[in-house]
Image (cartoon, rainbow, N blue to C red):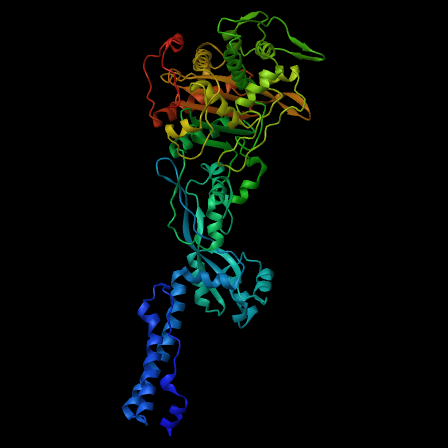
Length: 611
């Protein structure tokens, strides 16, 4: 009877399509496991066909068919369980399944950030986060009461609303301690679980906080270099779920952690001593444009990014714009010397003030005589500097500043950058005042880039916070002044440290040169005589410059030993000297017993150029 029924079904001619699985390596499951169900089914059909040909099934054939059927069923169950386990194994702590339950983001891994010597500036650690599954909870009130006892800082009402919702997954608290995790685990609450996430930490705390920036609760960059890293593709990896491991190349910065510490330490000392509103400083390699150190005070602990929102914690070097005062005069001198219309023997009339309608331009320490060009630099004469700029004309002045990158926003790896405040109508009065650092507000790091070119042989190199070789710098460098102009500027800057307003910046053994700057701040539309921004730009060693440094103090006060003065020569200049004494050996520059005469700079044939 069975044989007859099978015959009617014409099983001998039955052709089932072959079960051919795609050639995939699914979650590490061997291919023979994937082919097992198909083979078992074909074997079962073979047994049935054999029984049909004999007219009746034999006992051993029936037993064999049943055995194969059991193997088929268990094989399918095995595959389902194995595949599911493989999915969980490939996603640590079930993050994949949790993501499927909720739109809440899970903190993904980020690459380490290292200084130029391989020291860790930022890294990830694994920490537990507490979540709830409202649909699995038995008693919401009991859960809220128990969790509140362990986590008293949680908002009880908010937690109750989350757990009483219809959602499948809710965050309760991110980043809990191991002790808290153990106590909650011992409560044995159904529907309450833990997920291990990546949390960003900064071992240096405040050190280099403005450069590093910060991340949000989901470990995504929101400021500084952290945000730049996301803009380079990490954010897309986060969204795609491919940034969940630590197999990412570290980001190597140009910052030297040792130099960074010294810079911040000395700035903090000056900040306190001169009772300033703020202090800032940056050191750059003149040959590559690398930022070796950068600090702006007050700053914040990078581990607590909420403090970065304090307006006092502004990064004054890239986000703020300022009228830089007499440090800007160096650009005017370079423009005049590079034009060929002035040389080191040129004479400039500083006997009387310059008059522009109701505006008068005077000197802080008026000499009231005709000055040589070097003397104009040494006494920081506004009148003499303005005369040079006016001789070249408004158009030439604007073109030169444009070429030096002072009229456009400077872009670096830091997303936070400020646009210069340029006069809408630029006439002769504007040229006269901008020549000595008033009437044009720029980011200090912008001025540093331009003055880099004054000492490195005439090459304008965009600054960077990433490691860069001299060869890489040469590919993006632009010549903006002649090599001989750079030599003359180095001569003037060194001469200023020996005989001019920068004498307190001269560090024995390091052949320092530079330019002071004291700018009156604009308060309610008027220049204040009491609120000053002082700055000093220095380079060392001046016979072969390698590093350039800017130090700024916002509203410093006259203190004991400054004889009532709050100008740059009395605060930022000596601060620069202390910094150089400490950082130069760290940068491989050792002190020399004998310093060459300043005239040797003019006679030297070697010019510092980007190779």
